[in-house]
View 1: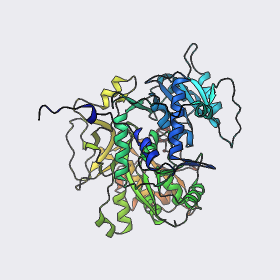
View 2: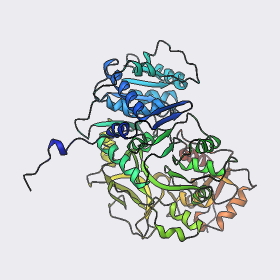
View 3: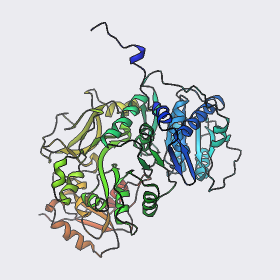
View 4: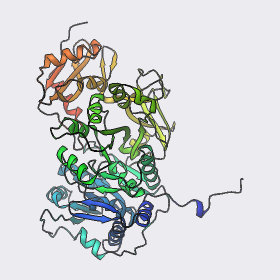
Length: 548
């Protein structure tokens, strides 16, 4: 046995780029990407990707491990660049197009991007970002992604259009395979501040495994019809650009969407699968355009803990929701609320409560646990004791770009990746997030979960959105401060909502302050900006809660 060693036939580096080659063989004439009046087949998509990769190398001089950035919505070029850029040996960096010019400038400088693909509607934004570069800084080459719906002149700042690269490229290009499966394939920035950008670097191996793993856990069949509401710039669309190639899916691309567009697209294209953050589920279930579906549509949701009430409303329309958990640092979902058949016999509200838990590790992960962050010891499986989620597995990032201190802080010598997310472990081995560590409210020595209070608020028939943060208190140290927006279906006062919570929560968890706002502040990826709300709560000064 000792003489049997890895050899070239059994140790080729894993890479998700091989999914495209296979799709072009099996699903050659099947639709791959649909966008407005554009429809490409898998054979055409492979050819277009090879041509763009060829042009990136031969015409634009991009070398192995150069960073190539993209600022674009979910359109065909954005999908193709997930293959074309790494096929050129480069590292793909998709940038959130909702960021401001200053932030984009910082990310481009930090990544030392050599080439930047710019969607026509982001042209002004990107040029403003480049104008903020320090003098004598190297700027990336610019390629404009045009769109027939929007006339955008090719100005002197751009060296080419995207379609010109397709036209000039070589369809027989011998794409650059990774020498090691640990070679970088993608660089994604977390939603941090501009003063401290965290660039998450993923390997070919990690993305191969998370793409494959996500298909298995969600039980995605061959040739699904996948509607892109999740931005591909957000953790590479949880790695589903590569995953859809593995199963020969049809990618329905949308530049913009709302509830009506989603419902219309589902009907027009017979959509079967969607990935969406909980904010989209809330939009679909609360919209005046919501309607029972003609056929089941499978939704995978993650990003923040979805309230059970939102899950219940969404599934009552005919959506089949799977709930999972992942981070930019894992490239996709690595924990899933894997469903048990006997749970189907439970009442709908109980099923929604169970489904709101994050769940258990996916098959691609080695280990997942909830531990005391100080001792590293597993917490009790009682559904009550708070701890930090820690992970082990091939999907975990290589590390943060140019930040060895930040990398070692979360990837410790004990072999775990520390997520910073606070959770409990239930007796059945399913974990449930209770907060980010910075969002836990400590009131009178009790650790209070803002997520738990939010879940109750979402059951109120008048509430559209809810977020709970800490407000300083003279006696208790901190007390819950709730910010809500209303859906317009029913009337409710601040007093009414607090009384509603008092009937459903322990007294120490009831919001002592409640603010009704027209809309809650959100990040560019749709998450509620709790740091803004925390600042607002602090600016109110210390509350004077009586002793209870």
